[in-house]
Length: 190
Ligand SMILES: [Zn+2]
Image (cartoon, rainbow, N blue to C red; front, side, top):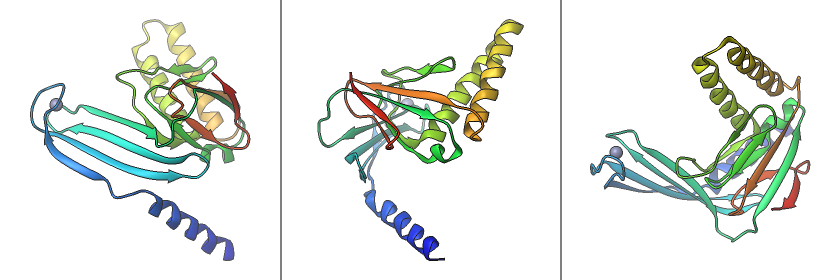
């Protein structure tokens, strides 16, 4: 019981850490040029990372969406890796900027760039994104062999999410705006 109360209090504290977003409606969309773009900005104090700004743009006409994050404090370029090998690891917090390259060997890569988004998630959130990417590969596969390969990758990711298999996750970010918040994470200079 005591534990449950303590947990509730930490959750509350986390909720409070994020500021109410500043929202601006009616901006011009860079894609369809309608004045239907909504900008939102908020900040959150992330333990072991610091104050981080969250930005997003959403267009109600064309569906354009862009999101990114930026740490208040300038950080050096980073390369960070972690071995994911239990269900418990799913909750590890991951901060990924649009400049980050996220790699899981033999599974795939999330590339940085203009169409890449920045977000705060956890290991499970990253694995679910890889799963979705691989499902697209499976559905688009022209030949049986590629389709089978994608199917096996999806199985593997699912097993990792259930804590029944392991993978190594690596994030490289020249902007320094990414992190994996865990004692298990191994940081290197990029
Ligand atoms: Zn638009």
